[in-house]
View 1 (cartoon, rainbow, N blue to C red):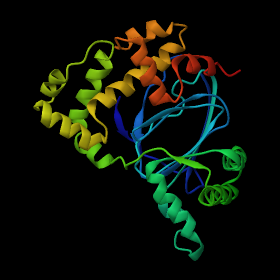
View 2 (tube, helix red, strand yellow):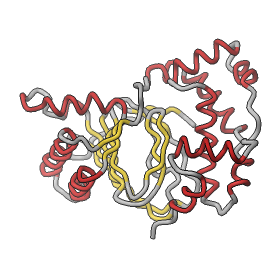
View 3 (cartoon, rainbow, N blue to C red):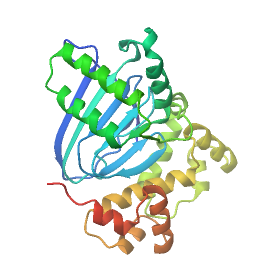
View 4 (cartoon, rainbow, N blue to C red):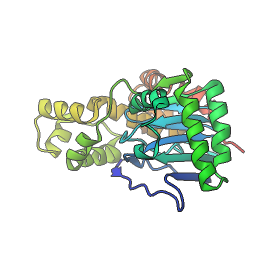
Length: 283
């Protein structure tokens, strides 16, 4: 898992960027954990997958609509998707939005809340989704107007879930990037075995108490929480490979199926069997 700063360039003739992904994923999706100062709207018209925004990790079913705040680290929404995956992304810098206007109060409030990551549902998801489907083929000026309409729909809605309980600081992630990179790489290489925190702490030249404080301060989660999230992430991928739940449990470093089931449900809001049933390929 790498922490990358993404440089976002506006589309030709436009003041913001639109990305339209349409693909079939046949291999494991790379985490691609990144951040940028632009606000980002991600719309998945249909299908299933996993959202990773800040320290929040959960699955979505039947599409998704998420607003990601400025510099809030996140991954691509194709994680654990199977079959056809479509994703429309709008990336817009704060200076492009009409925040100087008297009418911009609700929009400013929305942007403030977006620092925690917001997942929209219901009529809001449907209405904004229709606008985002149309925006792809529109000329630049019409795109801008549609983008403002989408932000207006989101700013006047109460149909949303807040994804993080605290703000994830990219400054701390960047400041400690070298140490965190060593930790992340170690977990990627050893998640299927027992991970000794003493070994990891020594890897970055810290005592165990100092390492625990450092990791919690840099990521807002404990090291054990991170390891569990990463293992469940890998479990999601393996569950797509026709492996039994018990096989996946032990391959991901868990010693007891009961505990694995309980932790999977806590993180993904579904049991492994429910996840396996619901995450069918979309054709």
